Length: 389
Image (cartoon, rainbow, N blue to C red; front, side, top):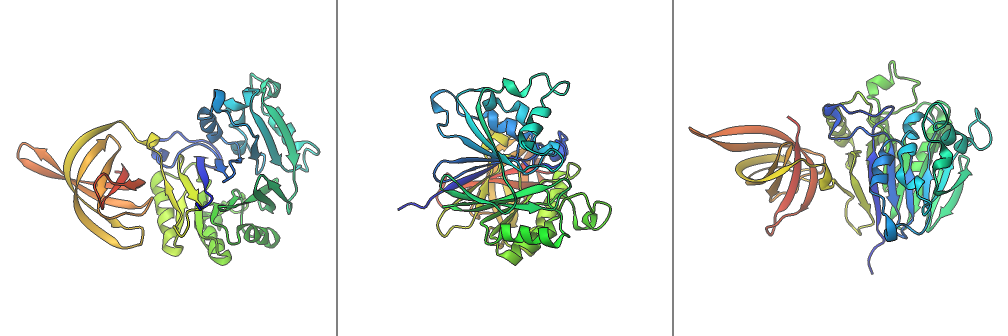
């Protein structure tokens, strides 16, 4: 009998404001939106940042439309968590059904969720108002500490420490437990306890990591965000299996996030930095959690054949160095055939021999692993890398 499988997809991972800087391309610039498809097919959407538009552009159409309603959970009402909603095409199709969940704001009173979504599309802020969305919509206000069923999954809510309030969600599926705890700052004993209860024994713990520990103890204190170190400490304390660092600062370049990820992995075994397009599958029996990136984030590719030497760290943490051929090259990356299987989101040193009039010349590059799959030849792994410099 096969194990139940759930799929977690990251459509937006940036915090505060979207970025279009080339230095943030690899991890992505869209604001928060995560999709979870449970084993029974129930679709959860966590937050409605600009990543929601990307999810909507890949929405099934025609006969492939989902029959059951989609469940959208909004952690709080700051712009970066709702600003993608007006551009979410499925909301304009009357065949679709959506159930929204969030909390009653003390600043707005009853129907806070609906008020917020309507107001951001009201005149003079947006040319099309909320009533133009023809999909079937329902709204449910929930409080911290609630527990309820959605399909076969159980949802638990907890208050988190963030200005004007924020809610964390724990979704217990037959394939595993996913915790979404963006926008929280350590320091409030009651809310710190909430976070730990939410994350206890989670298979995937998605936690705010916008600031560095130094920023968090300095001039960013009180801004409502956390750090990689706080995430590691909580994950270790409550036995979470995999930590995903989320809500990256708009000023954090890909190289900065690489360094944050490296520090996190030095202290906790299973850590990923959320990347736009990253997919995590839960439920594979006795298999460690793995993430992969779809091919859509690769550049124009051409067949090639360069001799190369690659060194890095395997998924088991062992260093390796091997000679190989680069057979598939793009302007931004390459697909490399290796006998070793490197760790996802790790850095590889790639030295390629390029032909010149005098013979050959060594070209040294640093590659970031974004894709791992079975190689064309027996006993090999096809490794997709993006070159970082």
